[in-house]
Amino acid sequence: ETGVTQSPTHLIKTRGQQVTLRCSSQSGHNTVSWYQQALGQGPQFIFQYYREEENGRGNFPPRFSGLQFPNYSSELNVNALELDDSALYLCASSLQGGGEKLFFGSGTQLSVL
Amino acid sequence: DAKTTQPPSMDCAEGRAANLPCNHSTISGNEYVYWYRQIHSQGPQYIIHGLKNNETNEMASLIITEDRKSSTLILPHATLRDTAVYYCIVIRTGTASKLTFGTGTRLQVTL
Image (tube, rainbow over all chains, first blue to last red; front, top):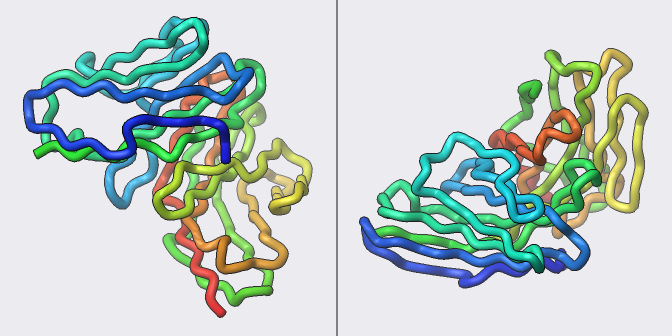
């Protein structure tokens, strides 16, 4: 158990809809990162939030956006869903200055039909 | 960040040592080697990391060659629960935790 919880665990949406995924960080961690993992592939970095500000972004379009709240929990929002957005979405928390030792949640499995 | 090369799959008998290699021939002096693993249906789990010295913790040992161009993750006594995909990642500390996962090595531990 990492102490990182994600909700929901599974979600089914249709193309064009919007989705919000949620993540609660491990206690004491001030940084949250989001990753997308397609079937059979390694996780791909979407973005990171530190002190409620975006602090690094991967190669994802602007329809992928996020928020970090004062309690360090986070949301990932995806607008105008596409079929290729079907994937496992992983949240990871860490302590800024603690190196790249990330603690991952079990993810949200998103299916876009 | 330096790219890594890992074998796609490996088998290991339970109780034996599992030695997982990783090639990172373009690694820079300020880049660390990190290892994560992902058990089916779970998020990745941190295992160990190192810069140039060999490292050991309760989970595994990390052996980095003197020229730092390759490394080996050693699970000293593999169990069935060690069956997972193992990722070797090279990264500069402080780069926003943007980990670049490849496809990793799928380790199958068998009886």
